[in-house]
Image (cartoon, rainbow, N blue to C red):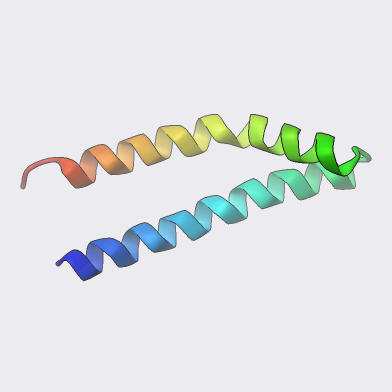
Length: 64
């Protein structure tokens, strides 16, 4: 069971990373310089990632 949980958490982490990078890429493609695009990408995506990570952690930590 711990291996399954670790696998699921790893996949979710990679999904969040792709989400963050896509926001950064979109901002850069719209003409922002690299530093500003990274900051804007984190700013836009971080609330979604934090909320989802909190929900996942809460669900994983809940007793069966």
